[in-house]
Length: 434
Image 1 (cartoon, one colour):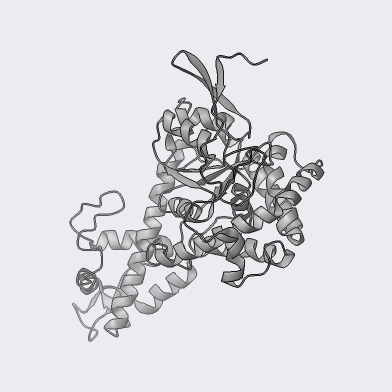
Image 2 (image 1 turned 90 degrees about the vertical axis):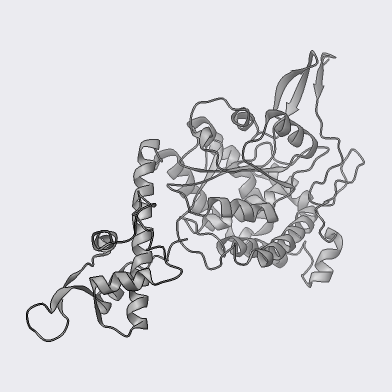
């Protein structure tokens, strides 16, 4: 019999779960995000029955496309995995049995440097996941109360402190909270209270989590590149699309819960071992229910991500500054190449002297070149010929001597050729600065 001094925060607050489904406690765990009720959404939005196979397959594809419209994954197949993970967040609820999965993997959203779309991905998850909560530096009390009352999807941004051994409250929650029934004991008014820690979580940071937390994650690496659509420029459209997808996910998962629970019981065998088997099991179950025709695709990407996590590269702290410097060099160099080509085309010039090029770049109202100091000295006094040559050198192009006027003394000067600059950009087709 449990000691009377042990209490459990059981989440009996009535907060939304993200889908309509009555549980054994008799309470209606309905969504309170301001969306159309799940049972009426399909009819009004023109979609098929959310329980239909074609509708489920389409939903996964549309969530995947929604993500890849606004961010670029280093491994493009990660969009599929994240889409299934998003559907998995909608299997959680505030009351009763929290979810059908004993363990639910975290997402580790990472890259080697800033500006790779990590926070953008969290912003998208904020629109489509179940009851999302975006955190940066939460207190322990806030985390425990949120999880205990709501079982939300926690989205933890800028969590670089979790890369080391320091025992922050969030670190402690993450150590256990990938397990559905995990708790952390705390003494409150001389009474031991058991706070639940299990709920969906995604962490974004530059670099890697410490090894213990990393082992509980599906690692999603981001690429610094320009996606098809700019979230900042079209946020209102993305917000509407995200809310529609969330409502459809609510309805579809609600109708599929019995199938999901049955698939959990059937998913005994797995090609993975140890903790990898635990954390990938929900993703494979969701694939079996929502898009069984893509099972072999998931198997391949899951095997790749799992192997890379255990045997592939890791982002060491000592390397991150070097990675950041390289990325800045490429970003500024590409930006400069594009602006150099632009000013030459506007002036209809096939070649341009360095001094004239610098003046033209300074005249660009929107350009950064008047105050540019270099990747490591952004408070400088403007671009000069040496900085310009150094920035574009990695692209295989640079200044050379041309005749500007009749071939006589004083007319041969250093400058740039439009065709050479265009060739350099064509050989390096990665998109412009994010």
